[in-house]
Amino acid sequence: MAVNRDKPDKWKKDIAKSVDLFNKWFMNFAPKTFRESRVKTTKEVAATLKITDNLINLKRGVLKKYPGILPTLRMCTCPPLARDRLVGLAQVSKSMIVRMEKKQKLPAKLKDEELEKELKKITKIISKMADYDILPWLEKGKATPQKVYRAATIIADRFCGAVADPLIRNAQEARQLDLIGKWLKKRGYKHIPPGTGLKYTDLKPGFFSFRLIVPVRNSENGKTINIPVDAVVKPRKARAKNFPLLIEAKSAGDFANVNKRRKEEAKKVSQLRETYGKKVQFILFLCGYFDSGYLGYEAAEGIDWVWEHRINDLAQFGL
Image: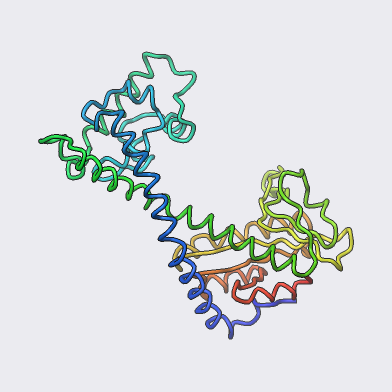
């Protein structure tokens, strides 16, 4: 039985309410999160400027000792360099850049001579493309405390702009799962926390858990792949052998981005049904900018959804 996907006459009104709900949350949450991130990042940038002598003496020895400062150095250029762009310009291994930035470590198997050569390529690009507008002392004058602090805040803003979307997306997902959890608990469902080694097949009627892995079979090569599912719920009236309800929490701050990602859910559902049969229930929990194009695509794939502003629709899925 369809709940929302077969009612296109209601979509326009729901889309407007969903956009309003997301915008209200964003205005309350995003500025605070951005400010907190900005303060923290400014301190980290200032520390990087200090150990590099405000980029005046950007030697490969600094990168060798502090490989984790590379993301900050990328934000000190004009224009700021994306990771892949630095790889291309410096002609260095992407795996090396990724290891330096994510693990704050240097390549383990690279000989010293070769490592020195690679680090020199990186520092050469950073120095050549340094942004003199925010680091004016590199061209002329002195690096006064006031100038250095100003530069640190500008670079931090660049950083925060790059990380704001993931921060907001993660916070919104956590909020959505919290809402689902509270809704279920009010109706007598019991939560099984992560870290218990629970499998989706272990869920008993009246229980739910978050972020469980559901293995599916890849029809192209026959291999098993793991699909992470945000919320897995076993309805109270379900039989032990029945497949649980799978819920994917989705939020979006613009219409363009969701239409780029709409095939992701369709692929998940296809793999789930190929593995477990057509009776698999996979629904979306939506908040934000989801237009008729997105909804129509998902409906055509047999995917239903619940709007966050009408969370009680969850009951129509047997909960």
